[in-house]
Length: 293
Ligand code: CP
Image (cartoon, rainbow, N blue to C red):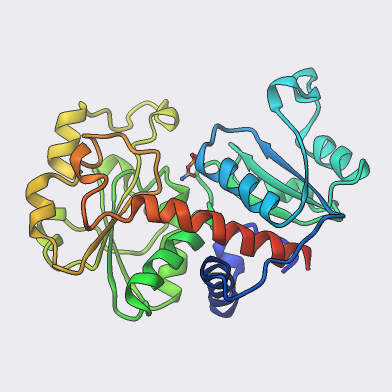
């Protein structure tokens, strides 16, 4: 694998290979490779807790040397471009760049780099490592994707997680449905839009998305009060109680408690939200090792 940029670029075989490697790292079945002569830099031009920290832990477990980069103290503040920043890191010896950036498909500007890129999120474009850790979590639960009913709820239009998961879960054989306020419908994705209350008792996975206030500056976009959104589109206690016995609840996090999901349900028995984060570290180890081998 040369780069990890978008779920569209991954074959189902590559997806299975990555989640198998991650699972084997997790179980201890596969020995961790060590890359003690390699250097990695994590460039986060948007805020992150889970993705940044889990990449850092994954890289350190794989013996990599971390080149510290903070946008606030870098020459980005002097106007240096993304390409020149990345080319500089390549020139000083970085072997891998992990990048989160607000611009959709920012990586198209980086064609001339000679080192691999792991996309840690590009605006509302793609979030491939989130999708892969979600797929790993679903696979742990069900052992297959064929005919699983997946309901993705919330801000579909602005969500890189919805886009990545729609593409990958559909390719793997799952039935993906969306539930969303009309303002957040994404016409470019072909999944059906449903009323959450019509399907909540039939789904195998309900995946809630964060309401992304930072991407709602466009006039005309939905602007709900928290309680109104929770009652119309969120996972309330009443909806949780209607879920099938074996159904699971997912959320990429960070969670707006009592908006997308009732606060008490974040760690309820059907919730896999913290399991997703745990799997994220192993999955990112698999991605880093695949890019460096
Ligand atoms: N899920 C996710 O990408 O979280 P962070 O923004 O904290 O990395």
